[in-house]
Figure 1: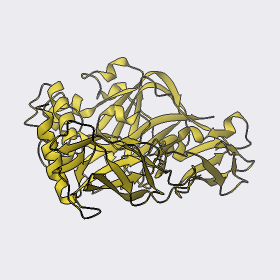
Figure 2: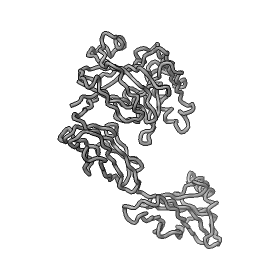
Figure 3: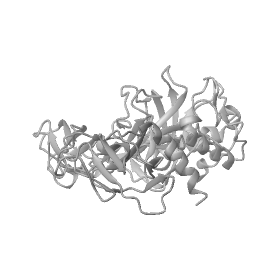
Figure 4: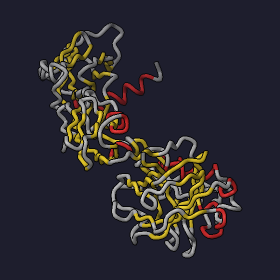
Length: 449
């Protein structure tokens, strides 16, 4: 009991500004309050959803030895009723399909004898509407073979997700801008027509939110097939040429950066982020010749609202044997060549590069060369840069400068020539003037079938 009394005093003190006499009368009790109320917006509030009930726990001051008889009334009984001491809101729509308004504000009056107290009651709609329709990189921009059949279809619905993830009604409709190029079923299966070309598939939420998303489909005489990236891993030139980049601590070979994925803070920047199928995350390296890049937990951008980012950065630095308080930094030399080496886990045949820039704001690389090798030693520190063990695959630089969004680009190597290798090396040749980092959201290879 001694632990409860201070809480009651605090609650009552906070509630005092809201005390009012509905009938303008006095009572022998000093005050009444309910445990479930919280102080917000300079007032005492009760909050609940329209599909839940809220039992109230009544306290009096001074405390009564006998049960207290209280009367509960609301300003809008059509919105909120009280049975006994239990708040029972009515559904916003009176059904399950109408979504407005999003909140209701009512007033609850509690009377004990002649003493009364008022609370603001916030009722929120339990039905969450779709805010955004999301597509994976594979669904945002895809290609299929003309003529339908097994290679002429694509399951677009399988690439769709929603924000918020617990939206009440996830029903969508699909439509095609040109059904002579591609049609789409109510289930989201896109099927090619008998002619080549491009079409836009529009996805529209049916919950009244108006949320839409488009996907681009290209119908070709052949079907590009991205390789299976299971088991893929990559290492970086920073790990292989530490004297050129001077990363601190040495165990970190990529630039830590931060993004929010579906509302969850995530530390990104590792090579593995190129293979996760999510364009919101990306591999990130310092561009040669730029000013130093320093990340220190507890400083601007890594503390306050971003403190969880700072905690993740601390864990990363500690895992590499560094001092979290000192942070991590990179000081690249102007003559260092940026590259990364991908181990595809086995020999695979490919004819094109699939490339997604780090975000939709701008690209962070303009051109690059690609090399292949089947020598296992090229993935080790000693031999990764050895020119004799690599075969250059492209005859002219691979240009990714035209696309400045996160939409995936598929660029044939030498017009679609096929190669079979286990290891590939991507060497950056040129960069845009903006940005300090070399970032890749998604990287893959594929073959035309």
